[in-house]
Length: 136
Image 1 (cartoon, rainbow, N blue to C red):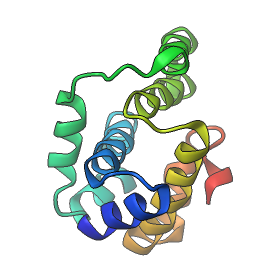
Image 2: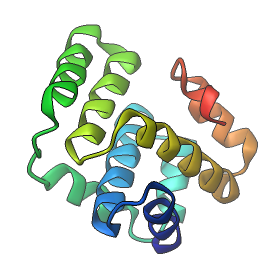
Image 3: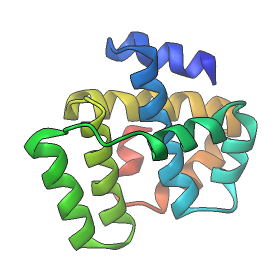
Image 4: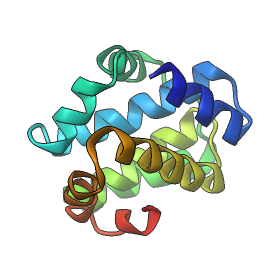
């Protein structure tokens, strides 16, 4: 997990704690959406993942500005995985990530996750949510 956090922190140009919260939000999204299968395997294979998820959930929502509020609000209206994905985008915005940084986060996260669970399981995980496969 520390390697993933360091990689994302360096790539995005953010503090390690911001990267940890962002990864925690992403892992939390997968844990909620897909409590079994590749998501649980990925979380189990990343030491510190449950703690990162808990920290992200416990972190006070920073002011994500208009974008964070808008994305989070739209997420609540859309519903399902697509709505939850919009809510995730709002959470990433609230920790200070721009849309471009969130896209880079997704690419880095999935590249790392592929090395942990393999390409086939990663594709199972991302194919269940429309739009995620573009980051593979």
